[in-house]
Image (cartoon, rainbow, N blue to C red; front, top):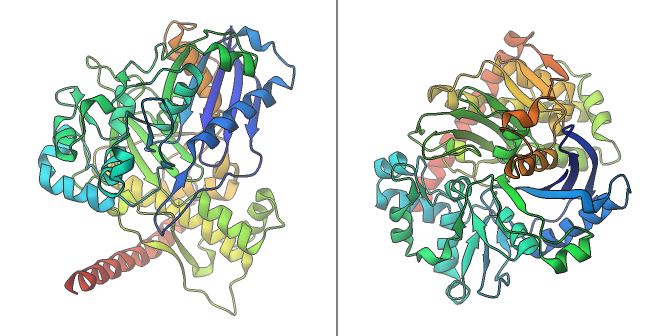
Amino acid sequence: MLLLGIDVGTSSIKVSVVDAATQYCIVSAQFPEKETVVIAHRTGWAEQDPLMWWENVQQAILKAHATQKYNPKDIGAIGIAYQMHGMVIVDKQQQVLRNSIIWCDSRAVEIGRKAFDTIGHERCLSHLLNSPGNFTASKLAWVKQEEPDIYAQVDKVMLPGDFIAMKLTGEITTSISALSEGVFYDFVTDGLSRDVMNYYGFGESVIPLINPVFTAHGQVKASVANKLSLKPGIPVTYKAGDQPNNALSLNVLQPGEVAATAGTSGVIYGITDQLTFDPQSRVNPFAHVNYTTHQKRLGVLLCINGTGILNRWTRDTIAPEMSYAEINAQAQRIPIGSDGLRILPFGNGAERMLNNQQVGAHINNIDLNKHTSSHLLRATQEGIAFAFRYGLDIMRSNKMHPQVIKAGLANLFLSELFTEAFVNTNGVPVELYKNDGSVGAALGAGIGVKAFASAEDAFTNLKPLKVIEPQNKAAYESAYADWKELLDKQLINNKQEEIICQSY
C-alpha cells in the first residue's frame, strides 16, 4: 500500500508518497516553489487564504504524480499535517467566510488576556493547561466581536488541516489534539471546555465531530479523486498540527522524549504524561497525537515566532544573491560571539514565551569600524539559538530536562553554524534525522489505516544521520549571558512604555 502525506505549511505545501511496506519515501513534491504570501493588513496581523492552500495542495499532488514513480491508484490512505493554531470558518455550504487568521497573528492577545483574567488564572491553567492567549478560540472571539455579520454565518470552526480534509472528503471532523491546540479542551473533564465556550458565547454546534487522530476522517469524494487521479473512497486517516506531527515523524511519543524544529518558527516539543502547565503560560501543553483519556500523552511546546523568518530576512536584505549554504559558509568565518554583535530575533508577532509581548527584532552593539555583513549573518543564527536557550530554560523550570533533542536535518539545522550554536548554548546533544513533515503525515496515515501494528512500528527504519555533542559551551555561555542581558533590558523598556500608554 502507498500512503500520501500532505504538509500544509506557511511557506508552501509539500506532499510525499511513502511505501508502507518499507517506510521509505518514493517521491516528494512542493508547490509553489516560491514562498507564499502572508497577508498583514495591520502590524501584528497575519492571514492566508484557505482556498490558496487547497489549490496548492492539488498542484503539489499532481506534481508528485507527474514524476511517474508510482501508480496513484495504489495510494490507500492520506495523512495531513498543518500549521497550528490557525482559524478557518465556513458556512453551512462549506464556503469559506474569510481569510484564515494564522498562527503568528497577534490581534486576539488582549481578548485572550481578558478571558484569562475573567475565567481565572488558576482555573484556566488547571483545566486548559494554558491561558486562552491568542489561540484559535480567541481568534474566533475576535471575529465574533469585530465582524459580527461574518460570525453570524459561521457553521463550523476548523484548524487548517481540518479544512483540507473537508475539501478532500466533504466531511468536517476534528480531534482532541486539535481542540487542545485551539484551547477549546478541558483536560480535567476530558471534554469541550465549558469555561471557554460559555465565556466567549460560542454555541457547541460550531465544533466539528470529534474523532481520534488515527482514524477515518472521511473518504475522498469521487469528484476530487477523478481530478487528482486517486481512487474514490480512500480514507483520510490522520490529521495533526505540524509540531505534534514533527514529533511523530521523529518517533517522539513517550515521556521524556524531545523534538525540535527551526523553520519559519522555532519549536522545542517535549512529551510528558503529567497534566503540567507553566504558571505564566509561556510554554504550552497540548494533547499529543497519541493522547487518550486513559493514557495521557501531552506535548509541551515552546514556540519562537521569529527564527527562520529572521534568517531569510537577513539573507534577502544583505545577500539576496547568495544561497543559504553560501551565507552559512560566510558566517562561519566570524568567531563565536560575532565580535559582540547581538540580534534579538522577535520581529514576527507576539511571543508567547515573552508573555505575549511584541518585542520586535533588534540589532545591538554595531561597531561601524568592525562589523561586516558576515557578522550580521552569524549574529542572526546565534541570536536564534540564544532564543531557543531562553525558552528551554523556561521548560527546565517546568521540570522538562531533555537528555537529547531529536531534529530533522532541514531548515536551520542544515547550517553547521546554527547547529553548533544550538547544541553548545543549550548544553544538550542533538540527533539529526532525515525526516520530513509530509513523510510523517504519510506514516501517520499508515498508523490510522492499521498498516502498522503500532505507532512505534511505523519508524523501525528511522536511524540518526549524525549526533552533535556540546564542545564549546563556555564560549557560547558568555555570549548568551550578554544577549540575555540585552533582552531583559528590552522587556523592561516594553513594560515601561506599556505603563506610560495606559496612563494616557
